[in-house]
Length: 465
Image (cartoon, rainbow, N blue to C red; front, side, top):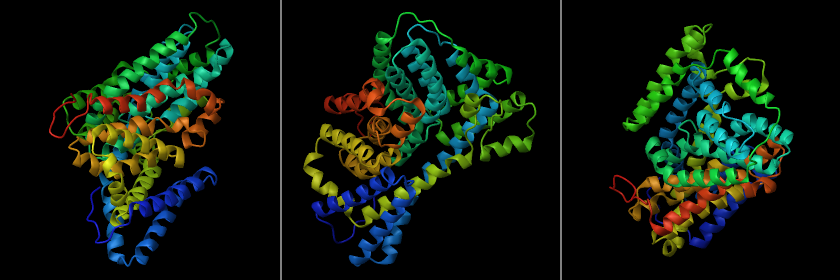
């Protein structure tokens, strides 16, 4: 987000104080007051408007700051709508249920933690939601772990690691779309570039979970069998249900624009949906694109997994994005972020320091605010210009935002994800934290890559070197 600066500027320490007041107020309201992030952000906008008026900035200029900030997120808003439709259409076509069935089919007692990690990863990529993955298949794994007499903390670590691998790498994930859109990088190019850090983190995590897993274990896997049998009995599992996914993959490899790729996959899923959902008419099939898909199997875990998607499901994310970007627009218009960057200038002249500072900021916002969306939005807005001046391709920034933003929130005891996961899995954040290998490795690898220059792409380069 680049905006024309005013004639005045805050001193770096003044800008830092204002930023601490804003983030501290937002964090306090969310963590201790349980307030949704939208409200403290609106109050912060009011505070900034008042600050602007005290500095004799005209109302027109302040409004321009708000609208310019919001405009930078319109691309993300459109993609979010398409993602909502993609999820609901993939549910109707059986695409996501088929993936879930195939993942559950490999579960057994041997190498339990490693399998829990891989299956959670597959389902996470399939549904694009870490919290949904943990609250459904994660709960099933916790039950099996208890029956086997295995470590609940290790099982929770494996589930969370896999769920956030999916949240990070799935084209259906709102954080993945947000990170790519905030710095204007093609969605699939962003995902491809993340593989450089995500791949090694996945492999190392898998090896660690395999080493820690028991060689053999015998127990009742009835809960997992119930999930599999329900998917089969409801007629959700078919080979042709994978066509929308294969089409999306093919078009992504061919570097077709995200909008066209998503549209083609949605339309193919709707067509297949008529064969899978035999009682669906045209009206119901089209309405689910807005309302989302609703599963009524009678099995709570299956219905929780499959009742997702639709444009309506994205409104929370979209409204938060627009409000946060509007606040960012004011921070730029008032010269607060430029002043902060000016104060950090001597630390951001070299690429290693720039990437480490970006990662540290994303991690810091997660711990200060307990919100992964804001860690991506605020960090992306703050460092975008610095990456441009350093001659770095913006996909470097979007990768760091996910490596140090998306996967850190479950490690924060008072964070949105940390609180949720502790509640649904029944394991305290501090207990599972040492075993969330994937989440711990991701920021380390991204900083190491920044220090060594490995896979750091300059503007104009076709691939990471």
